[in-house]
Figure 1: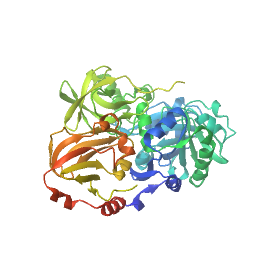
Figure 2 (figure 1 turned 90 degrees about the horizontal axis):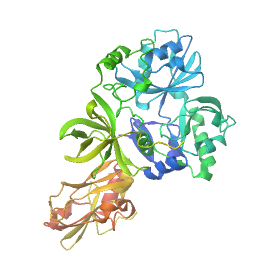
Figure 3 (figure 1 turned 45 degrees about the horizontal axis):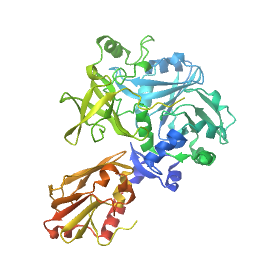
Figure 4 (figure 1 turned 30 degrees about the vertical axis):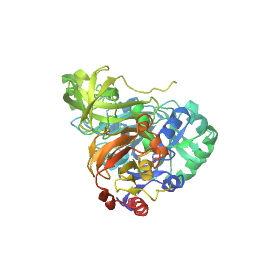
Length: 366
Length: 128
């Protein structure tokens, strides 16, 4: 693909100057690694890493019935959100499959800010807009924001040097609007790594200055820029879903083991009829963690065998830098989707032994 | 990074060093750099007869798996056992101690289609 056809974040030049290896990620030219995936992974687990996630999309919903629209298009109970709180949720089709997984932030009673996956942002916006039968407006807000994620046990310490907002007072999955590194910012205590940290939204033209300020502030604790490669291994160890892998249009939240983001006791929402039906009849397949027992790495899309017969597929698989094991997630018939089941992953036509395990694979010590 | 003058290279990013009728085969500096942290190497058994152009094993990094292809036909006389236990050596010394296999070759003429260091570097550089 021609480099010129790829979309770029406002930090593209910063990454190149830092020697990042750039790749095509869903139509975006993004840094996959800088110093090396494993090195960056360990930096995030033990100190702090900095990610450019400006490719992610933002959608804003404002108006007297903004909450009604959010509650209608998403699976979680937006009505339970307090101002300044964020919530992981699902955007579904009527048949119960995922349009996307999203992060809903309540900015005010009549204003919501949604962070969505990069490659789904146009689709998500159209889905929400087309279902807007309420007194509110839906804005495709991605061009207004760059997003930088500072993640790791030292994230709080580093970030606090750059803002007068008391970051320790922001609880996990809450956010505050304030000034960060001298510029207006939305500071959310959220992330996709399984570590403590913040996702910081700033205007695109201020992204480079913000990035450089964080890199400078993090020097004493060994901050490292981290790419999409480390972001993937970090989220997999923490068992966070990735659209197109664990979730997609043919997968429901119950199958993806995300029942906790579905609130069937709220008013009808898009997909609720299908989910209520599935809740009664039960699911036939479920997302399950596994560890390789034989030599090899079960990778995305590989077939899974139970008792020698085809039974499912791997959604994500990788060596785990923190655990020094080869781990993965797969879909299995629900009767086999428990820890301790011997399975085989077909790796280049060879069945290799693996075993289902409890997840998450990695959990930080709080 | 230097690409030894006496080696020949493939478009699939392997190198061959021919001494007599023994060919030592590895992957290039460019290949390991593209793959990133290498965590797993799968090699054939000694005695296996390999045909030019066919896959003879694989090299995996944390993020991807890549087949390696036979640059010149022959019989495997040695594999680099070190790499089984320490695959990361492929990131450290790909043109030297981290060779993959040695072959007793059948037809030296098969070397002629391979790339010189200058041709390979221009190919690998232009690949993006």
